[in-house]
Length: 341
Figure 1 (tube, rainbow, N blue to C red):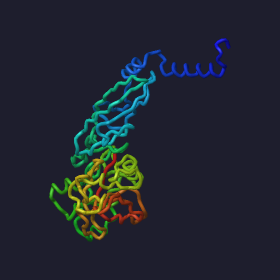
Figure 2 (tube, helix red, strand yellow):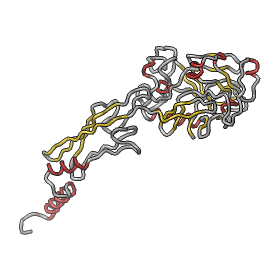
Figure 3 (cartoon, rainbow, N blue to C red):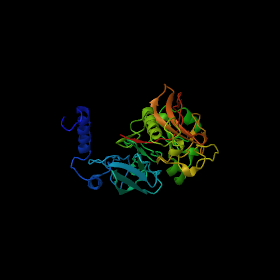
Figure 4 (cartoon, rainbow, N blue to C red):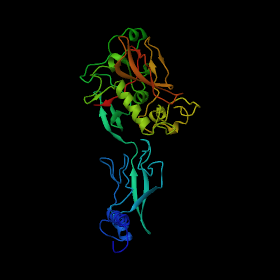
């Protein structure tokens, strides 16, 4: 060629020019490119979210259409990390405001753009009312909506009374639905907080829950735990193994215990999920009451065998939600939570 450059050299120059054009399709100077990318830059929110109501992870761009490189910093990585991961405050906490700063650079040009976002606390999604007129708050955890309180209805949703059984012998011999309150209490405050105890025959009835709700099965309990583990609700922030008990347990009424990660260790760190589980104890199949303040136990509708049903329970000494692979006697009295259909 007349200019003395070889064909490979010319090709390299043309390739460099092509890259430059692709990084700056409008032919802007570096300051102009940074300014244009700053104006166009936006955060991608989870469906239904916006800057004043953040509940899910964010999409944070790392480059602009005009070739700017974008890096991020956060003033509170506890709630929003630089990769857009969001951790929400517990249901009984205040919303938090976090500033995210994007730094855009190209060549020697540089500028910043600040986003001020409100991360919503784990939100109660509304209420549901049973046939007795009891009103229960609800909380959304992942794709599930749970009641925040234990059920305390005395009737099925068609108005049929559920037998209220106080005597031990009658309780032990039941093969049909029945309920009671712990120690046969009539204290309204205790009943409102802890709910009723139902045998499995009542808990597994499709008529126990209000229309649009049901008692969860074992798969649905597992879905709850899997979501909490995967989304950082383990007490130590890990995302393997089940260490979710503290995130499920209420901040009061649990017996104190010293082991790290146990429900009873520093109750102020409980209830990050908003599930608000209390240690309501249970009624043994033979009729006596036990473990109030130490255990919370909830039925599943899944049957183990003719005599036993599966359940889940929390223990004040432990860091996980127990699953008993052999189930419990259907005549035992356990608490019940409801899940939206």
